[in-house]
Length: 257
Image (cartoon, rainbow, N blue to C red; front, top):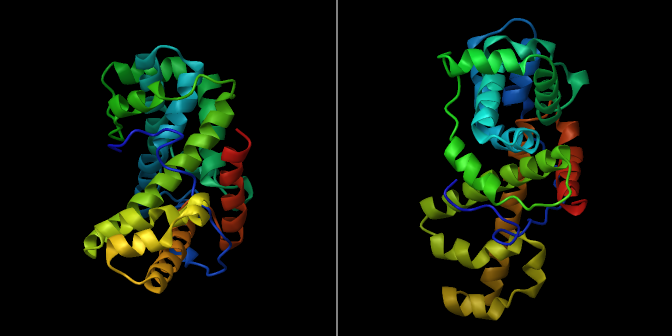
C-alpha cells in the first residue's frame, strides 16, 4: 500500500451486474465456515489470509475508539491473535453472514469483554500471529477526514476502499505483466463513473490505436474489473447469491457517507 488513500486519488469504480458465478468450493470464507469446529490447517490459513487482507478497516475502527495509537495497535494485534489462536471461526456459520460482519461483531465483543487483559499479555511478549504494518496503518489513519462518521461507518467505508484498491491493483498488475502499462494508465478512467467524460479520440491518438480499438479495449477492461471484483468479494461471503448484495452494500458505504 505505497499510495496514499484519499477521496480524490482513485475515483470509486462503477460496477454493473455480471451474473457469471465463481466456484465457491475453494473461496476463503467458505473454507472457514464449512470447517466448523474442526480446525484444519486449510481453514487456519484461509482465515489468516483474510485477516491479513482486511485488517486495516478494523484498525481504523479501533482508532475511532482509542486515541492512543500504541494502545490501539496492541488491541488490534491482540484481537487478531485471539481470532487465529482461539478458533473464533468455530462460531461462524452461513447464518451469521459475511466475513465483514463476522469480524466487526467479533471485534466489538472483544473490545467490550476482554481487551484490557489481552493487550497486557500480548505487550508482555506474546507471539504475534500476523505481521501488520501499523506504521502504514497509522499513516493512512492520519489522512482520514475529521468528520462526523461513526466508527461503524468508518469501518464499512474503509472495508469497501480496501477491497476496491485490491481489485484495482490486481488489474493493473495484469496489464503490466502483459506489457500494457501505458494502456492501463489511459484506460483506467473507464472503470469509474467519469468514463462518459473521456475523450476517446485523444486516447486513441496517444496509444496509436483506432477509436474502435480503444472502445473494445475499454469494454474488456471494464468486464475484467467486474470479474475481479466478484472474485475478491467471493472470498468474503459464503455463497454466490450474496455477491451482488455485497457489491450493493459496499458501494452504499460511499453513497451514504
